[in-house]
Length: 331
Ligand SMILES: *[C@@H]1O[C@H](CO)[C@@H](O)[C@H](O)[C@H]1NC(C)=O
Ligand SMILES: *[C@@H]1O[C@H](CO)[C@@H](O)[C@H](O)[C@H]1NC(C)=O
Ligand SMILES: *[C@@H]1O[C@H](CO)[C@@H](O)[C@H](O)[C@H]1NC(C)=O
Ligand SMILES: *[C@@H]1O[C@H](CO)[C@@H](O)[C@H](O)[C@H]1NC(C)=O
Image 1: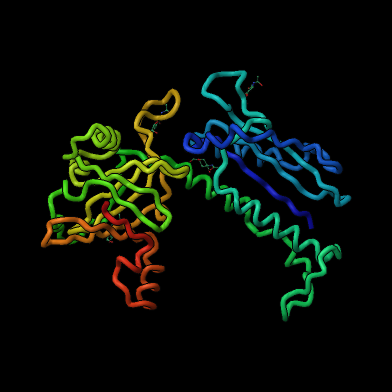
Image 2: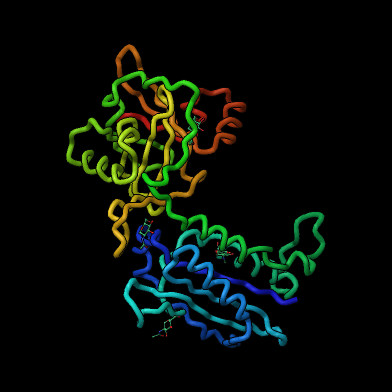
């Protein structure tokens, strides 16, 4: 059985946040001894399918490298690309040498390195004893993870779908009855720090009057409705996978959060605002802890994975500030 590995790279607007990484990349050359270039791996139907995918998802360019073992068990490589690598016209077509900013590459590296280690057993290069109960690796166990191509395609498509606003607002689940926050909006603004691996955040509201906050709020106002702007807290969040944090009021001291990559002035020649985030991955809710007597906010608990937090709570019986995924203390 032939083993085919496919890696699909997609040039999408999300690259703005990770494009810094490409400055230190080098072009990946297929000059390894024993590799043979082939034009016969990718069928014309698959070629047409990728072009359709590119057009359907408004992707400027796609580049694909396919490696498989030929009849003689020697590796064959086919490189192909579709679309353009810049916004300019002809003469700027995507090529197999076009560099991408890449993200979420650990799967490829992890599965390849584990595959190499596994392959060392039948080749007799690894003599480490196998775990108890496992006598040998058979063919089935040595196959690469199934559905790799499909999974990565679904992943990229999900990742690259821009979220638009305010013309197509993200549906929000409303509580039966919304109660206002315990304190004035302005009491929730200011600097918060976490010891749980998150960057510090400076929350702003539409009532904040610092130059910084006015800029943050006006960036969000390109996407959020006026009502949403009046009932949200916003911060910058300069990570590789996000640029901003939005806390949209749910009820009481509970807010829904989204770590999002904001493009208030669009990207490249297209200046329409949009944002990008992975729903369910970089979103959840936070609950502020308020000292009512002092009329002050102490901090907020961030819940990203409800099941994990619930399991932690069952185990320790601790309060939300201890069992949540992160605690941000107000400075
Ligand atoms: C592209 O969109 C058309 C029309 O919605 C659909 O029929 C087709 O299956 C799509 N192709 C791909 C590759 O997603
Ligand atoms: C660029 O790609 C288009 C469409 O695939 C093709 O028609 C055109 O000839 C290509 N231009 C160059 C310079 O290769
Ligand atoms: C917002 O948070 C509340 C409280 O946890 C939750 O019930 C609701 O589903 C969340 N809404 C969205 C859109 O995530
Ligand atoms: C410009 O960007 C917006 C938002 O991402 C999108 O809806 C629109 O289709 C784009 N326009 C063009 C001409 O690509």
